[in-house]
Length: 66
Image (cartoon, rainbow, N blue to C red):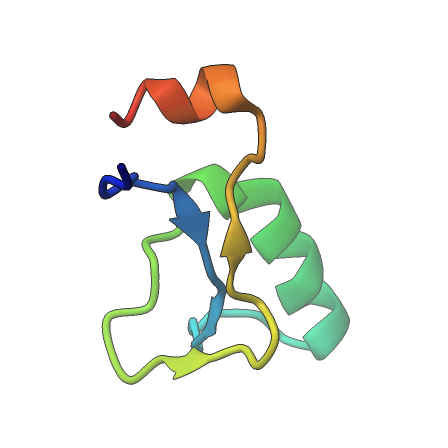
């Protein structure tokens, strides 16, 4: 007898954040230094092709969702 199994999945999206800086290099450095405090992009986001996957294939992990 089959049943419905819930599988945890993950996918990626691409968006844009704005960083105040005097150069691209400085913007990258500031982003890396402040990454934990930068909000996720609020505008349009685009699905990253091929990024849809299982979060884990470990049966013990999947049991947490069922």
